[in-house]
Length: 143
Image (tube, rainbow, N blue to C red; front, side):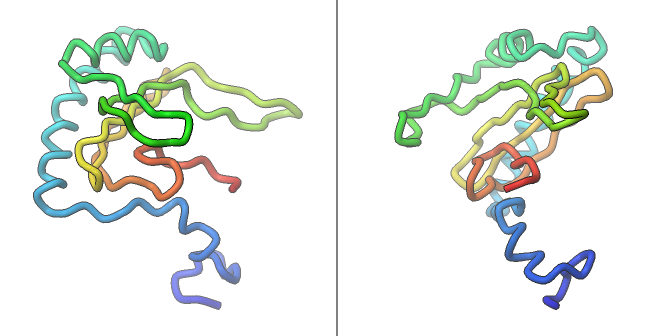
């Protein structure tokens, strides 16, 4: 069993490497925290107003001066830094369900992101490094 294997499953760390964010430089971490501080009050207000549809969240964040991230079909980033999307779906009672809410990702630097969520239950914002396969969004379980 490998060190830090959680429940003792063999290869736990190896199998979950896609769920570990990259490391940010200290300067970029400061930049990301500064951007997180800009997003937090907006997401809090939207949560209090019960506005968590991705289009409403996107509109409010674009007013802060961010530009939507554009990506080519081959995955090459073409510009912009903001992505707002619906929540990931989950399998429940024999079908896939997607709760109401929005996921937010802001690419601050290549190694620094701000992610957020706003939904009925809560809102939150945090700074962190990007994930190997999903960029700023934390990947769902089930690889």
